[in-house]
Image 1 (cartoon, helix red, strand yellow):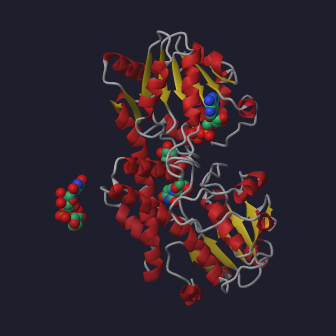
Image 2 (cartoon, protein in one colour):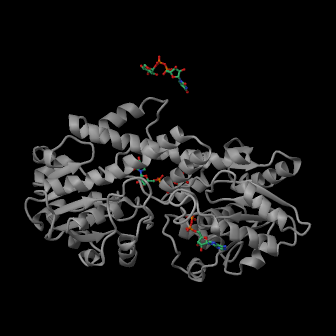
Image 3 (cartoon, protein in one colour):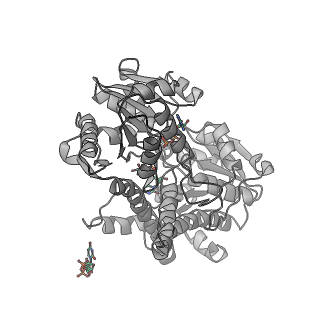
Length: 480
Ligand code: UDX
Ligand code: UDX
Ligand code: ADP
């Protein structure tokens, strides 16, 4: 019986291992983590992450062939295949600060593997890491090995949060990179055999190590670039009277372009896009490729611009000040169907509004008050893109109220802004919301999920990203 151990029970490790366990009943899968509360939560009815469908998968396998444990060393030493899915944040200090990936967690995991291993191991890179990390890990393992053979594979995960289970059940592709030696190929085959339990063979791509590592950064950079391209267009649409939805529909019909990932928004967020692009930029700079680095920097700059633009639009349309005004914020997670707030555009937008002395009433169905307060007072790392919006001061955070109901959030508000595309926001009773708001009542739809025409009939002044502007907003454009 093959034994798999995954180090790191986070957004990637947890769901991925649960699905491997479900699809491979004969493989024993143990997910280990140094965080006791995380493992306790994985073993309870209240899983540490919210992901549609995850509860059912975990319930079906936990205690049978899926285990969660803090006994990291024991399970690592017993495993044949070890996935490493620890966090790789952006470095905040020292060489490469603000751009390079911080590999502290990775290195300590590798050293621990070398210490406790008593049999040959396949070590699989699951978390996104800079190109050539596998080489570094290989060095740590082989220099510390006691006659034990290690094969390093890169098997980047492409799941998106909110659809993780669906993505894992039916992936566009599984990518496995390894050494081009006979032992390397054998290791690739062993991992391929795991995925072949449910993924069609033609969707399992094998490459060399560096191609696999770079593909993950490239895929995320391409996806983020699409969003920045659309968001850049959205500004031009507002200026010219074009409608970004119509433009994207027409553009996306070109089969060379495709229709997905073309939704204009208040900006992209999430733990991957910005981090991976920064990482890519750093690698380019280290290789003397300044022009290439500058090209990718622009994707992040446009994303910052988009968040800034949204805040400016709100302030300028509300008579150039939101001081003392109540603004309802619907949505704080970086996208719908997740409680994750890493790099969410809501942090920048809320801080921008607080900087103009607004009072905020925030409602998100999955994000706790503690999390929101922590995020708003966090010091964002300053890289060489303009950090426009400073973290909220302790006194500003006092002007934040977190509630569990959209009607309460919007009561007596001057404006409503939608920052996450939760389905439940589409079916709210907007007449009731309007009746309970200050007038003129504004809605700023940062995700284009609402029907602007219906809202205008009710009486709202409506701003939708990249759509023709209401006369009111056009009049204030010069102030923006
Ligand atoms: C992303 C990649 O999609 C996934 O393949 C990779 O493994 C991890 O990074 P994730 O960050 O979970 O996944 O979510 P994703 O759906 O890609 O959305 C990222 C951000 O872009 C969100 O803030 C989302 O709201 C935004 N977005 C997405 C848009 O603004 N417009 C779009 O059309 C699509
Ligand atoms: C383009 C558009 O494709 C077409 O829809 C529009 O109506 C006119 O402009 P065209 O310029 O004739 O058409 O050719 P296209 O196939 O798009 O190639 C343009 C250039 O890009 C060529 O020099 C081509 O060699 C290059 N190219 C294209 C690449 O370098 N790599 C690619 O993957 C594709
Ligand atoms: P991701 O989104 O990539 O899954 P997360 O931050 O959600 O990242 O999860 C990474 C997990 O890895 C965290 O739960 C963290 O406690 C765990 N971790 C980090 N270093 C180690 C280590 N050396 N041993 C075990 N677990 C670790």
